[in-house]
Image (cartoon, rainbow, N blue to C red; front, top):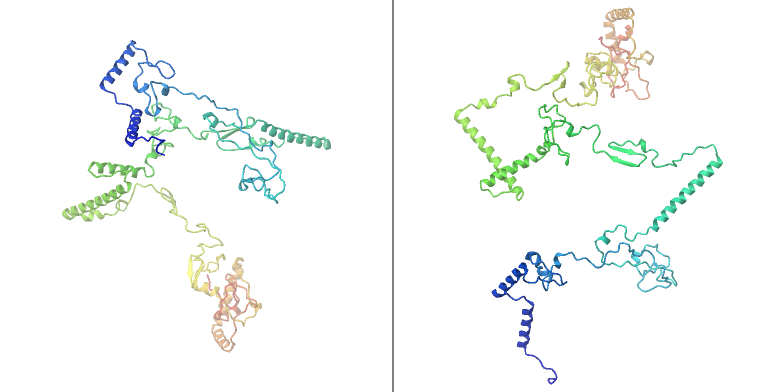
Length: 549
């Protein structure tokens, strides 16, 4: 075992490795080596020494500076070369015409299931979860015999710049022929159907457009578009035709500058006109809208604070800057208020600080307000908001006030006639007690239904002669029989039994018209107290005497 091989000592192996490392690393040039290289370079420039030659045998111009001729360290150049400065053309050019096979490989037919193939169809190029065929009743894995073709597997190879960006890579123009043939078959079927229809009805007229999609294109009205039915092109206009271009606002070349690239005009094209009359005042308003003013104030505060030695920056520390600005504003207001209090305390005059507004002192203001005859604001002030769903100053059914203008006894009504019935006709009643007695029902049942009179609120008034005669006779009879009627009514009230309230199946007495004259017999009895449930249907008995208007 020890006789065959001669082993070198460890020290010798270490020295040999150091020599290899030193041979790989470039040796440091001495001063003499630098001097010789400099003389050789000057001789080559002067033409007394031959020029340096690269690895391809071509001369290197000695006047090329070193930062161009010297190859970088990662290029691993073994000698003088300019290869790193020249474009290196690849030998293999991109094959734009090559097509990768796609679809099924019909050259090979498989009839038996192979291990590792798709359990559904039996192809080797995909698994069961990636299979695009419908699930079979008997899977190919358990079937005795199958008929399947494998797909072409596209091998991923390195492609160059043009191959990677080729839009028509692996495109077969023969596929487009199938689409053309399909359209030709459809057109042929249309022609046959048209010929059959003409045979059945020769007098029929058929249009040539055949439900063309451009049949109604002229009727399409889209703002900002122009449709040409012949060329089938839709052109989007750059602006609305009713709008005026910015550069046409003022044709003076010395006016505001219009930038055609950005289509912007920052300055006002008509600075001599009043701001209220100018339709377009430039686009500089964007610089002062939103939070731009707030941002500019914060930036100015940051600059001033930084100039006074405070380490703060708007973009680096926005939260810190905002807190500092709030604290500064708070202390500034406190200082102003303390200074104001000190001056008032020293010199007085606090009563002048609490002066009323100038509109009260001068009884006028600079605000223009125009009023109507009724006192409503027409112009110059914000109109009051409508607080009702009903139209203002619109009265119905002869009323002079609106529903809800009167309140009594827990009910709403009309103030003009004291009526509690909504949408009723106004009868001009002014006394609320009379209206209450008029609208409250009577439960007296000693008057037969035949004596009840129907009150028509819209009926015409009687003639003056008949009304005056009837009223005079009724007044004389009522005065002569006042004493007898009072005694008879009191005795009748004592002897009359209690009458239960009216039920729903009783016929109500019809209401009476207060404008119609009453007979003398109607005033003999006084109205009884209303029943428990009250009567809201407005019916009145003849025994209820209304008071005169």
